[in-house]
Image (cartoon, rainbow, N blue to C red; front, top):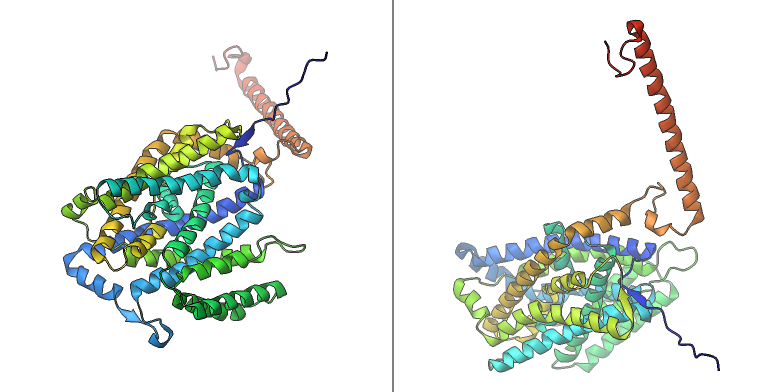
Length: 481
């Protein structure tokens, strides 16, 4: 009887090296986000200074609550409201394009590769919500803010990386970006489902009709900003008056854009528009939102309240503990049950460090905090202070963990960037290409020939010097007698 054979499925690598096109896209996207993150950080600091200097505090409140806009259209809004509903629609528009691209051309297209970051992101939202709920319920607080610590701010996280000078390998950066994309998607769903109290079906129907027209124009291949920008503004106004948060309009339009290039196209329309709009989002919309949302009063008593009130303590623990445990635990369990092994270049400690960095929640956390405690000005300010404190603690923890491994990260990044072939493509992506090795052989042969020529020239110079010395003195020790 023949011995039975056991068939084994080879273990899949998790967080392995990205493909060259994906690596290029991630690098370009994160470069803009990093610049925007630094501006976001500066805007947050400016808001805190403006709101906490006694001589300037009144002006901050005056500007933030100054109303403008046509009341007949339901748009007589404060500057702070315009920043949250209007400017963040641009941010979520870019988020929608990112999500669409990830689904059709990025890592989320392949279920095998997507399952680990997606599960990690979902656990990274669920666990902070549970931590908040347990903390707040134990202390007799409100459960309204359960969604506040669920969001990660990718721009702020990248700003921290830029400030501390840490070099993350592209696989970890892509993991962080995918976490943020999935995070944004579910934050959008949370806002749409849980923070819509009233619906005006007439204006909501108008917004949906506008979105259908937007989609038809895209399908027909209509080009020109003059067709889309006015339509987008109409859709935004209708969505704002429908009772659904106006940022949902931005996401919906972003998801409709085509993100796969056709024959003859260098870039898809989605990639082209994202390239144009991302600087506006990262460099203007999000920093202005931070300027008018992060201005909370900071004092010894206020900071003490953050760690004593159940709602604010829940936010801090959700961001610092819940995010790290959720993302790391989700990634570890997924790898365990899908037989995925971590790339040899990384360790699970690296995943935990990135999970800690994801505890930086700012833009969407502040927005959800405003929605969760709308009408309670005191609690809204305290929750914002909790978001700032939790993000600061998470950033500090991640800085320590990433710095420990920074030497290793730097070596990995240098290996990813090395281009001895001088063709603009990093060498690690050409190891299986025979033409690359032939080209390298030619380069080394030219270098060897040059070194042989130099050796012969130096030998001739040495012989000439020795010949000039009378009697050939110094031939043995190469110095004059």
